Amino acid sequence: MSRLAVVLFNLGGPDGPEAVRPFLYNLFRDPAIIGAPALVRYPLAAFISATRAKGARANYALMGGGSPLLPETRRQAEALEGELARLRPGQESRVFIAMRYWKPFAGDTAREVAAFAPEEIVLLPLYPQFSTTTTGSSLLDWEKVYRGPGRSRTICCYPDSEGVAEAHARAIRKVWEDAGRPGGVRLLFSAHGLPEKVVAGGDPYQAQVEATAAAVSRLLPEFSYWGISYQSRVGPLKWIGPSTDDEIRRAGAEGRGVLVCPIAFVSEHVETLVELDHEYAELAREAGCPVWLRAPAPGTDPAFISALGGAVTAALGRDGGTAPDGEWTCPGAHGRCPCRQGAKGARR
Image (cartoon, rainbow, N blue to C red; front, top):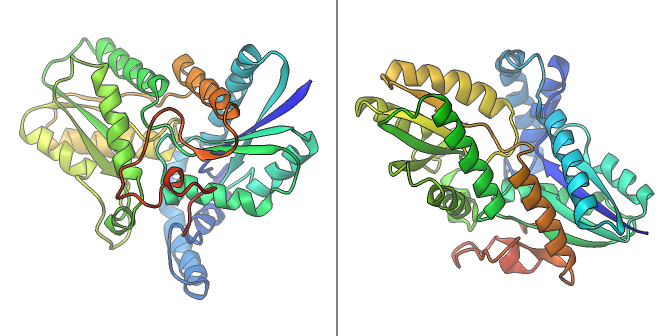
């Protein structure tokens, strides 16, 4: 029986209070996050992680002291293994996890994959929308460490995946119906933001977020009033907008409620469980929004897991290299999209 290894990539998160500072250091020393030379970037990362550690620990304390991202990713990996067993019964399929900024790191996972000795490898980021700062960074990290056997294929993105859209739409509709189907509610697709200069430099993330939101909205005709916003701004640079906090204030001024969907996240973590559920919920109350609802991330929704299984199967049907799942093609202005470059990962 042939062996297939699927590697799921995600951000990672601290597993306890003592891990918060080194997690932040790993994040900010990544050249995809701070583009300064190493002589500047490393001391800057140490300074930022030291100054932000206390506040970050307080946020993680709201979630029990650590991030739930790895446990949820493990559940997704287990569900995907089951889906692949159904789709490919003649193949031994194992799903591995590689986190970018905390354990399990890519190097440790690479050794596990090499020991498994797969004939086929599919690299599958748990970021539906490609960015050089997320998927691109993870794939470059993997390329540096994996030296084992197996023919590799990479799924760079899947922004208009029917399964992803269905999972989001189902979650949105359920939370709205559970709340009694309140009227006058604006559906707000909130995604992690990026500095404008990153997008202006050819990063396709914003275009792909817009594609995902459009795909979901087509399944929700009951929400004719919807929009996209961006959260989690840090630093002095100008970021893409509109910001989620500005959109919440606007909804409050209009007397509208808000139903927010974490459109760029497939797992619950600090940006959903703290930023959306606590910080933005409080802002919505202060702004006078009569309703504040939050749809959960896809997690192990069957439509989402089915989409991942289908993406893996489709990737195995092509010769190799990097490509999106489905028919998606990035607009021409986004030259840093790997599907346009025909290269592994993203070039910096």
